[in-house]
Image (tube, rainbow, N blue to C red; front, side, top):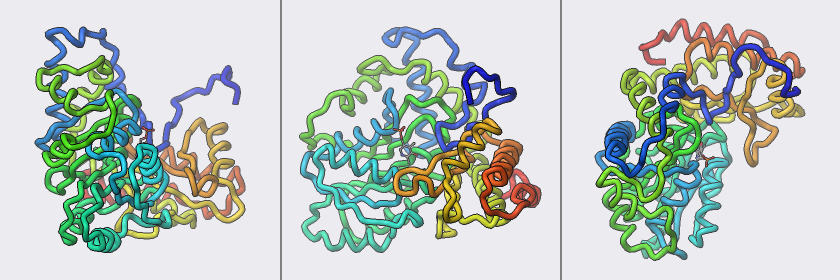
Length: 397
Ligand SMILES: *Cc1c(COP(=O)(O)O)cnc(C)c1O
């Protein structure tokens, strides 16, 4: 569709990140830039960091970088490890693969345990791999909480238990980029050492910020690392943060937005935010069942609250369907990434999203399936509405 043709109404941005930015957050960002070395700035920085800790459920520092989530991956590895160190990681999908690729490029020695992209991390494999490492050569275990490419969660608390059951001292690093503020995540209680996250998913902000929550053990490891790097240094960041400042120019206006988004999450209550996402995921699966389309996730204990990946029937291309839906209904759905390119599309139900956004989204999908000639049964939207009616807001979905 040509850019010069006006499309009335709002674009439906139903990809699983970047997610829709609420008007309150957009307005909060439309403030004059202040001097990041002046007296006002520490008030903003300290406030945001205090509120962020509540979302990560930690008393530890949360480092904020002006960068995409990929920067958060790089910083997690550079600060704690040294070239040649052994890392254990699991191929749950595209994002796990990208994080592994960063590790390989940084000179780390990654044991990447294969997966079928239809399940979360296998807890038995975690324990077995670590038990087999009698020399304790593995320095870090990396896992992705919500694998956004597949719509599948891994059991982050369970992985910690498996590490402990093996009696292994490796650092535990978790990517919670698309799970934070969608699924429950508990940095301190679950014994996570580094959590990587970013602004543009459950936190309802534009892209541009990433985070590292860091445990005492991770901070101790960072003192031993001999990796060469500069921009990502936790020690310089934390020394500056202690006075309310940053070692270089922070993304001031994104911090205004973060301040507002964190207030919105607190007003709704984190548990209600999780329940809302869980309910939307349930309603989306009800639509899939009615359409007679298959969920990529094969484990009914591992559905993501943030996104649902839908398998296309044989011989039908997911991106052709997405193209028709974009042109006809002005709605963006998530593309299939990596190994599932063309085979799946993803429905994002993440961030600033309500019942009618979901019904509208599923309506666009159902009409698109018909227009694209994809074999399916009608009634998915009705099934989702029935689910929403039967699982009222505030009740558990
Ligand atoms: C979005 C996302 C990232 C970060 O990607 P960037 O494009 O670098 O912001 C990392 N991990 C997961 C699971 C994600 O969903």
